[in-house]
Structure formats: structure tokens, C-alpha cells
Image (cartoon, rainbow, N blue to C red; front, side, top):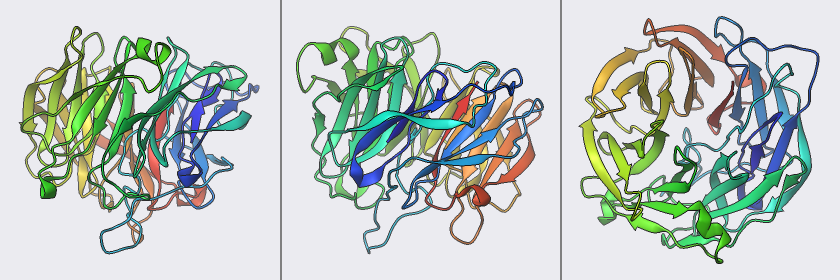
Length: 383
């Protein structure tokens, strides 16, 4: 798995090799525009790579390069056999960026030091904390859980022992249900939060894990608090609401909910819940600072849905007519939303750029030439 550091870019799955890597973006004379500077996509192929695509002043994408990670991609498998796709990993945040880059070429990436071993067997999600100088990896499959390592400009330290989630899964994981979905830090970066998908077919509701960062330094196999929430079934991606102890979490079975972390007990409660009309599998979420709202996507419906960050109510729905089968990972930078459609093997992989202020697509940027395919997953943005 790849991740990022100052003057760097981030996280990517290295599949069953279970390693973590740090990429550095070296300084060049090219000066990026103000605001967002680049987006990154994990190609997640047999020979894994990251596609780095610059962002112009008007929010549109141009050019792009592909950088090999030296690892392998991976995919969950269908109940009948064969790889899943789109949504090969069944997770959010398989890449992440930490800290910022100024007056540099954000596409010039290189490996920092050597990859390190990650406990667990099938890494799918990565989070980074600048405050704590930590990078944390969520793994799923037969040996699932979360583990963290320190990082410095020289690379990554050793991963902590795995905080284990007993999921009764296989490696690679069977079907997109019953697995680790998204690991991320709370707004104050004092807690690592992980959503774990349930499986309605087996009456398993899944749970949310909350792990105080201080626990990583106190004893091996750090202790977390787990909350199973009535009325949820397949908790998936999340978007932290700045300045609060809440986050919006998607649930592929109905839509989304605002969840709140109790700062004393670390238990998670439902603050509000929203069924999204016409949804089939709402899975990914991204917060918009400019609008104070959250955008969510569905791999089976080609649209963006904007939800209130206060009560998860639907604000707007932006239907797209660009031929994509649906959208997965996304990021918001300023007024622009960048959403990946990996394609389904028939339709090509593309990133749709939407101006959220006017509610319209401004670009449909094909990324197949950069190695993206229906296995691709993960979108990160460098601002």
C-alpha cells in the first residue's frame, strides 16, 4: 500500500503483498495554480500504479502521468468466482494525501525508502494524521483489522500489532459485504475510526470501531470501542464534519446517516438517517468546505447526491448523461467535485468534474490511457 507525505502523494493498495509505501513528489520549477493542484487515482492492476493528473485554474483536468508503485493490486471475488469490478476493493480511501505542496510538480512521484510489512492479509483503506505523524491501514479478509506506523521525511516506521476484527471472511474477500470499508481520523485527529460492513443476508449489521490514538502507544493490539447501530446494515464510506465529533456515513442498503462519537465513551450513535430515493448502493462520501455539505455516489446510478451535513437530508441531485454506469470514489476541492467511474469493462474509466455551484458537469476526463480500468479505485486530491 502506498501513502503520502509532505511534498508527496499517497496511499495505494499493494494487494496480497501486504506492504505499505511512501511516495514523495519532488520539487520542480512548475508552479501549480492556487487551490487544488492534482488528483490521484489508484489503478489497482496486477502491476499497481498511481495516475497523477494536474488540475488547471478553472478546475478541469489535463495531461497526467502514471507512476508504478512496485506492488500488486487486488480485488474481492464474487460468490460465483471471478473478480469484482467496478468497486474491486469494496472500500473508500485506498489513497490519501497528508500535508501540502507549494510550487512543485505534484505529478513527480518517487518511493521514499522501502515498503514495510502490514499486519493482515488484504489492505484496502489508508488514513494519515499530520498531527500525530501516523499512517494507519485497514485490512479485510481472513485476517482483518487496523494497524498504524509513524512516518517521517525518511519513510515509514514499523506497523503496530493488528487490532483484530474477526469477520469470518476469506482472502481475497468473498463478495463486497462483510468487510472493512473505510478507516479515517476524527476531525481533531485524536481517534481512528473504521467502518465495517455487515451482511444483511446473514443478519450481520457490521459496526463502527473507534480507537483513541493514545492507545497505540500504551499496549500492543490497541483496544477499540465497537458500536453496532440498529437501522444500519452496510456502513461504508464516511465524511468527517469539520469542527464537530460527527461524520456522515453512507450505507449501501438505504442511503446515509449522521453519526456522532461520544467523546467520553467512544461509542457511536445515530444522529439522523436519510433514505436516498432511487439509490441502489450509496457507498462513497466527500465533504465540501465551500458548500458545507456532503456529496455521495453510487456505483450503479450515474449521479451525485448532495446531503446536509447537519441532518443528512437531500439538498440537490445532479444527474449525469455522460454514459458512465455509476460513480465510486470522489473528492471535493473548492467548488469542484472529482468523481471516478472505473467503467465496467464496456464503458471506459473516466473522472467526471462537476461545478457544485451550478450543479453541472464541466468535464468528462477519460483516464484509460493512464492505466485506469474497472479495477481502479481511490481518489485523492492535493490542494
